[in-house]
Image (cartoon, rainbow, N blue to C red; front, side):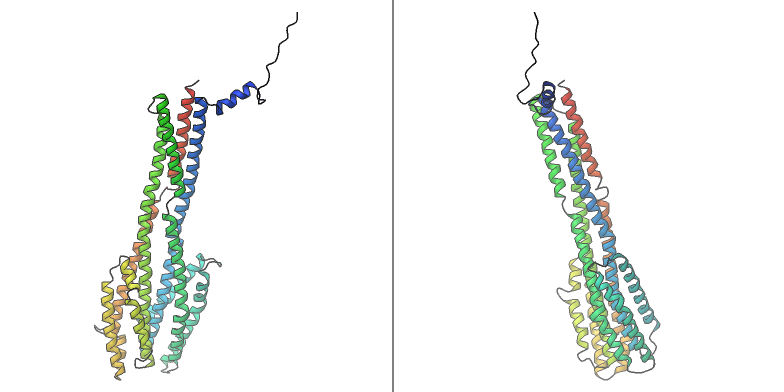
Length: 437
């Protein structure tokens, strides 16, 4: 009698026994399968959070680096160009008032201003690409500055010869400075200040993606631990607990770094606004000095031309003017306001002498360094504004450095912690699965 062995019928889904066993191992309702699924979710979520943290940290570090290097350098260069050009014009007109051979100190300061402006223009040209919005005002200054200096030299030549024709060249040069070079310098400065502020915002922004993924990961891990405790009455899985601690540490690192960086960048932004306002204040003072000299050169008796002096001072002292802005950003401007008032009084005495026909006395008041003279009062005010600007720029540099220190290792530190959390979740849950074998 022959015995037949009947093959087992295939499963309904067409899956053989071993295949179905392996599939059920991962997807079935049993505890090991559920633990494996949770382990995969927690591990992948930790790795995704690590990648997001790495990208966000590198982006923030890059923004701070840009703010502390390229944009800060261009912003400072633009401010120095703006101030150097205005100072050169003030020195040129002041030297012309002296008649004949201008004082060596004034000529030296004029030459130093041009050298500083040229050096800063060269630095800016290396950092600014042709398609950059700052390229156009930069080109205006690079091409216009030689023309300006040519007009000044021509004016000096005629002045040394005692010919009044030099006045027209001086006036033409000063007009070019006010209508072309200084507006271009101001446009460059505003462009770079805007770029610097954009970097500050990018560097201090809350890392929303990191926070959302990190908190979601922590919630899932804690919920899993709570449910496991209710099912098994086991209070602690060391690896999972360590992974949760790593997630918390990563989130705390981001929180502390964000707060510290934000505070430092807020101070840097305030210092930047103060420095910009003081550059503007310095330029207004220098333009007022240039106007004062131009009026004397033209011997206009303080007619319409002297209105420019009054206009510059009014803008300087206005409620929304640069001194008010600097004061609102932590600068003590009381001394500058006092020095401005002293200069205005000295200027009035100078104008009175000129209006009364005492031109020699007016001229002496303009160029003298004696106390009470317009020249002396201008020097005091110019130094006060310059010192305040230097202090604001030093504060800006220190605050940007603090922001860089606060974000140190931000790109890799939290990412490493989240990666360690992934390893902790994988190891901890794998051990729990092994307990069911």
